[in-house]
Every structure is written in C-alpha cells, then in structure tokens.
Length: 184
Image (cartoon, rainbow, N blue to C red; front, top):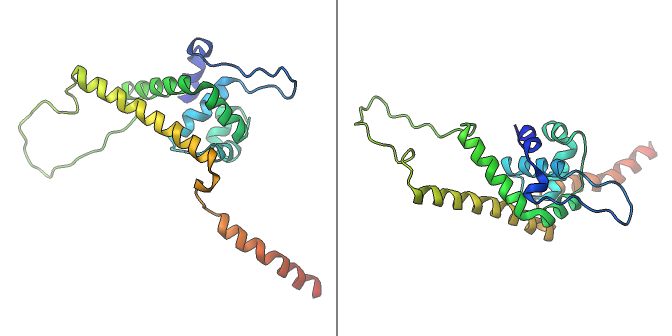
C-alpha cells in the first residue's frame, strides 16, 4: 500500500526536491525511495535514522519497498531536513487515506450480554471542530515523529541500547578465547 501510494504522488508538485549532485559523486536516491522509508518508519514507530538505515538493510518489507536500495542514516536525515514540510503533508495524507479505507483497526470493546440503548456514538459523531482537532492531532503526531528523529540524530546516546552491551561483553571475551585456542 505504501508503494502504490507513493508511486501515485506527484512529488515535484508536493515540493520534494531531488538532491543536486553538482560536485560529482554517486547518483542521488530518488525522493520516492526515501519517502517510502519515512512512511514505513512512521507506521512502525521507528524513531531514529540509524535504525531506519539498519531496517533498510535487513527488513524484507523495507528491502522490497526500496528496491534493494539501502540509504545510510545521513542520507535519510538530509532528506528529512530538506523536505520536512512535504514529508509531514504526505504522512498526514497517507494516514487520512488509511483511515478512509479502514485499514487501521479500532479497539474492540465487549460488554457481556448487556443491552444498551442505541445512541449516536461519539466516535462516529463529527463536527467541524472535531475534524479540525483530529487533523491538528495528526499533524502534531507527524511533527513529534520527525522531531524525535532529529533528536536521535543529534544525540546517538538516545538510541536504544539493545544488543550493544551484550556484544561488547562478548567481544571482550574473544581475545582470551583466541589465546586459549592457540595454546592448545
């Protein structure tokens, strides 16, 4: 769905600028590829460009979305810096489309056998104010996500530790194990 959505967009009209490489170097990634990475990250709550880079290298969904391209974290971060407002608009459009298509699930509430008088549900009752508030909430959610990515880029210590301490412990044992193996 992300692939079809991004391919249907007119990226130039939305304000996405292709990277200009006047100084030479490797060809730039197409904005659609990087936009797919961001939408995937937004949907999966990935809040670091370093983590997006890692996912683009190992996650089959993202490998397929990017056509086996694996942009590094700096490229992903630069794309966000250069196209932040356009990314925000596209993420909002995508979420609105998913809601319209009923792709996002709603929580199910079960009441055991109780009979309730039918009332217009607050969730289905929309006023202009509620729609405006929901749009604002959606825009704030996208802005928070982009701000969290910025913050994680500036301070790598905010990244989740995950396996780093365990790997450091294992790496500390390697020289001793190697020395023991060569003695025998």
